[in-house]
Image (cartoon, rainbow, N blue to C red):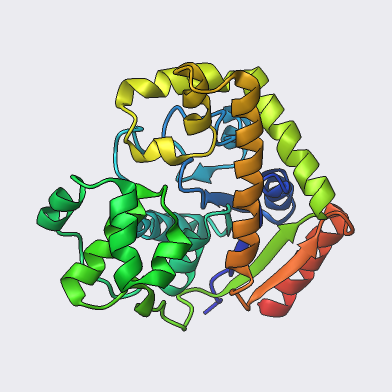
Length: 302
């Protein structure tokens, strides 16, 4: 019996050019694309998440894009379940599944499975929701410094989840480890660029998002409320500061560029812990050469 086609994972920091490259790769090898971006699942977040155009999606099927309303929850477990279905569907067509995106936690969960943590508890969450981010952060700091410092004070949803796990188990979330055996055969590539070029691309992308209507998209998103998960996506909180008069447009744009660069740094840090990924510097290696490298790796893998 012929072996199933291996999965290809294309990741790297934001604005590197993963999306454009993945389309070229899909055309070359006969692949279909699964988005591993935790915010592209939400309908309407088109400019802020730089979604691929509908025309390209008609040419090359993309999965896990526009599958939730902005005020719906979408967890990492949901992602793994939906991605598993997409991989099976793509393989049924005898195509290569190509997972593309920068959400490291989602990618690791798909490749290795989730840590064995307990499900959510509404009573604990109800109590924690009465507290400010700072208060939850300080509680978590006392019992799980590693998780607190990794999450930071702004990500309310993940702060609540980390403290909830401690309350349920008496163990810090950071003590729950991912399984080590991969769930899939895969080839992983971390694409990046030299820092000056990457930062220039980030700045150009933010400028383009503003020109294309990020402010109006943020106003549209407000109808769903400010505390929804979708508002965690880069760009919306920064534009909200401008819309509500807390910052000038110039300040809001400067803040968005800075936070996007900080996010890119965190993506570098996350994937340094992934030993099975080849790092490819697109400032030095042409995309055509990378495609040839992947084709060679596929031949060796099969």
